Image (cartoon, rainbow, N blue to C red; front, side, top):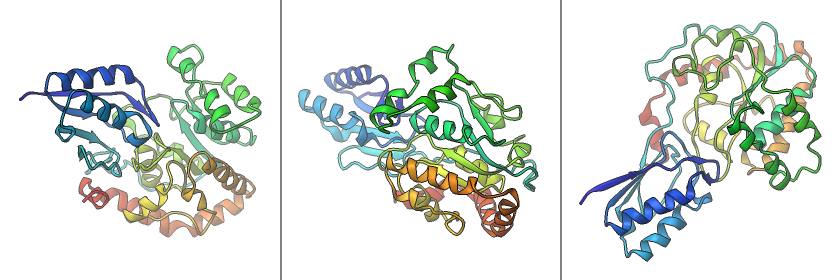
Length: 323
């Protein structure tokens, strides 16, 4: 019996090509093929999409044993009692990788760094908020109104209907200033061989990174290069991601920064999490550069620990989530 591989395109809570995915599933089942669904190097919570509904509907329609379906995902928390799940550990660097210069010394103490390529609601809201702080923060936002993809993913509907914003003047004003690029981090996507190398000077220029992860809804843990970068470069972080993201980092042995600011935002689901993150940003923004310097000196043990641990991280370390 032959097997067919189906590769749907996904984003947070959405299958982009849902009709094609459904028709591909129907064709495979109707011709009695084994099915491998490969969502690539992505990690959404598929329960938030129509993924399982499509499988269930077509399996009943074609009297197909759903246990013949295999799924490849990088969401180490994805679970199903009916299909077979194969996990690709989300280790977005070579296990032998070491940064060219790991001895980062903060120089300028700008408050924040936030680096955004593709737009979505949380990234737009947080980026516009950082931009409005009127300080020399380090920021990229590659949205370009001349690009078809960017215009189709403006995310204003997410601000209205999910984040329940009544006034989006700030976000619209911010979009009108884009694309925003930073001379030391100018390309998007960042080339694979430059995801980490050559960014040391960038990380010397600010205190804390606002990490906006790719998937932020539902039950998922899919850490990307966005979180490993500040660890490699001894930089504290605040994470816009799914609930319990920091808790899952703790399970891997990493330390975070509850001694220095409130990390209760980690327990919150999207979208209520965003307002709590803004509160943390405003708290840090209220600090003088001297106060940030003192805070940074007091967290050296945490930064050292995280840097050493991420340099030793291996794919098998993620098995604690699914074995």
